[in-house]
Length: 415
Image (cartoon, helix red, strand yellow):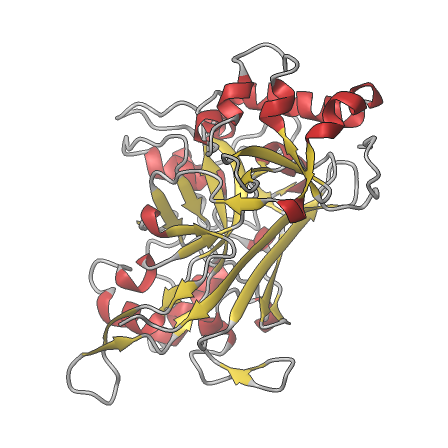
């Protein structure tokens, strides 16, 4: 798709993408913007000058400092808005009216794009789950008996989700070193990352007791962010039996500033790698009109950068459970979900060492340290380390679209 802006055809933020975010300039209130190239379009200002089409007045909805009001609109409104954005950025007749509302990225501050409601983090990579099982349970089957029958997940802490660029304070808590007879308290010494995608839920809040069927997932899955689920492995190992992750996960989770709409990822949909045994009917995909399936994977390539060295390239296409299956399983018991909820994919890992999405796996729990570009070695994060996640996916018109970056720097513990 072409645009009247002076933008190269292979720019990762072309008209095929158009992700949403929340921005501000000095002295101004934060509001919704859409990225095009290296510019931010102030969509509320443009919408106030012209009707985006049938549906609600989007100018006041986009004038807010959060995407939540827009997320709460039905899928049909998301599509009307996207069609309008493509039109005004593609058709030269709109140039004079739109140009004054394009702002260089260098002049804005990006904020958390939406207020997170519920946050559920899944465990959807067979390779990651197998690696972790082999590390922690070397004498047992790596996968738990239920793993291939349902998408395993846990509730995270939504209030500690932060936008890319926020510094991460090293957490403290109880840990049980193998050499000690009882637990000790202190800063985590096995601080890790988890390279993930986060799926942003939208649409009207579902009704308590009414599951969301797999075939209706497109009505509720609005878009995708990059997600880094920072993990204190020593705290986690001591606390997670029998109820699962708690303080080892809840101190911070970073997400990217831009939410890429699911509509921009239609060209990235691919078949799942194969599910054996076949899932129960409520998790079984059905053919769609275009010959695909309601349970689909996504051809998204991630990149993990550690202090300037790319140490891993996890492929999302290898994930066992799909986002639609996660949503269907989350609500099959009647649990509600609504605008601003966030579904983490779980760590994305491929079959090769250079595709592992956590440092626990990459260093094999410290037995195989990673050498960085400056010659230093790491197994887990040290104070001052910077981790950057990046990702891209096929674009509808050829080339690739970008998902931006998710960046965090480790600061020393406060306790």
